View 1 (spheres, rainbow, N blue to C red):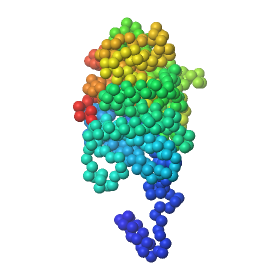
View 2: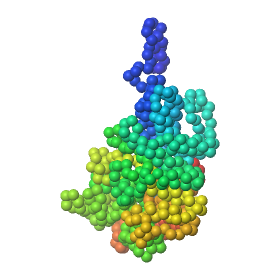
View 3: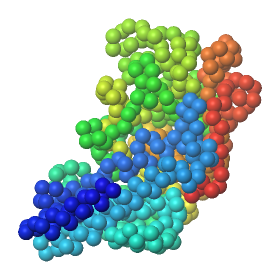
View 4: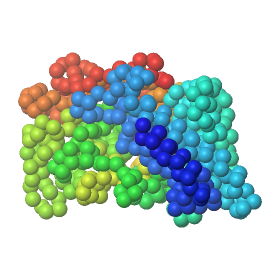
Length: 545
């Protein structure tokens, strides 16, 4: 009704006025008067860096659907096998990703109009950036949905309604073509007109490798990752834990989404902060993730004579204590100790003993599995008024490239020293030593394809934990059925005291069994009434799409 009245008024004005009605005033932007120079094109592309288009990467979104995650008795739709066509997340991913594609297409359709007016090099770089994003977004959709609606031009409403789905391979050909154009035409260091971080040649090459990985296109993975390694632009940061506490885009970072609280790109960290430090400690790394880290000789914990379930952080791969807060150590200004008998803990800053709100003895809402996330979490999360995180949202880093290269070569059965070196570079960095110092870390030496496949898969899990990679790996390895075992934790106070603490069984009553996929089995502890089952998980085959 309002629209009809408005149109009537406009028509009347046009009839009685002797001057033209300007529907596109110069003071306002529209598709009619925008896209008129390279700066405006770049501003349009800025929207593709906003987090609504990266909702699967932000706020540990996909980690919540994996066996690396624990969150009280929360049941996520994907993790309990309840996904339907009306699942809000699937709809949001679909709609927002197509918004990104439409924006990229609009830019690409407008760029030819600027030819001859501006330097060709400028226009080609902008085209390459738009095609990079279009490739990323179409790659995401084909991985998640299979055959999808596919278009490269701006659509009318009628055309959109008439459109069917294109074969996945047809879409993938365009994805590769767009990535290749971006690789050939984006600069190594892309800062645009405003001098800000933007997608570059390395990002395009690495993201091509990632989507080829999802398609099991191993030769393309090798080609792209070798190109990245040959650029000489990227390297592993010397300190694994410190990398995740930095707000800078470091040499290991290949692609990230810059964040700024003032510009609305951030996420709340309150749920991952100690209750003693003012957070809510809603969610934690799972016991299964904790159990996956091998001992310092590279052995699974159920085969290690050095593993003690009462002291589960000792004699373990150092990435464990950089991912999960070790009990009895300082974190965010307090000693973290979830033991039910620890009623007070030290405030390291003031030297005072304060109420331990991370112990079940003081609050029933303390972490149900007595673990706390350390990776990514910094003092700045706690200090900010909203406990928000504005560090860059890392989408791709160099360690992932090395492991993609190793996995692809293993699957091609092209196992040579370069494969071992790629895995060992990642592992040696975890131990803060050099690749050649094989007596200082558990270097991989086997050349058996099956053994190496399991090794690289486990290495991806512990190296890339809580980086939104586990979901995609389980999806492409078809391992969700095996990974989706129940989520266990400690009993509430009375039972955990009676069955665990008073019996001398804290932290774990025994060592869980670890299978060939690095997945731990806690069922015997549960069957004996020693631990609590909080969430059952299920995975129907249909959820692979």
